[in-house]
Length: 255
Ligand SMILES: [Zn+2]
Ligand SMILES: [Zn+2]
Image (cartoon, rainbow, N blue to C red):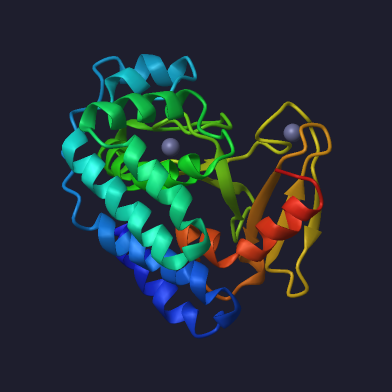
């Protein structure tokens, strides 16, 4: 499974990235905890082709079917993992854990989050990590439904991208969904968040990573340039390993 691969890459890379060992440890713990989640994905919607041809994602928020009791337990577990790794946030995390006291409360908050996932708060960060293994299961189960897709949001769950790769042969952009880890190729250039045609970028010293920034919507996209590397890359692991790029982008006023 892809998560196993991500876990293996993070374990190997930890020794080379001691400066961000705390972040890597957190994600190793999250992936470990998510392995206990059992997710049964329903068959794809009967009008899958129609939705995709209209540019709509396959999964709609109100159609999400998960075991809310298990999700609540997982969420409580994640709050404890976050608090263990970031003791300074422990009080806030305890408060979040209390908000999600019952399966009904979890369901309600998750559905709200889905409508506006990027409300910048700790709850949102926790929810991304709770929902990623769940939505990834949908992405794996429904991957065969998706053909050519040139939109900037995810065909599985409608999420936005937060990491991309430039392909070896063509330089085409492979997008990684921030919510479900689905990957799709896009020949589209320009900003995936607004209609701007062009993005500026800064490259790291090695040339392997780029930080694309949009001066219109002030958002950024981390990108790995596979043409510069002698290896393939596990994008979910790279998302974690490039946390320094997020910090640089935030400092420069991008979100
Ligand atoms: Zn997605
Ligand atoms: Zn933009």
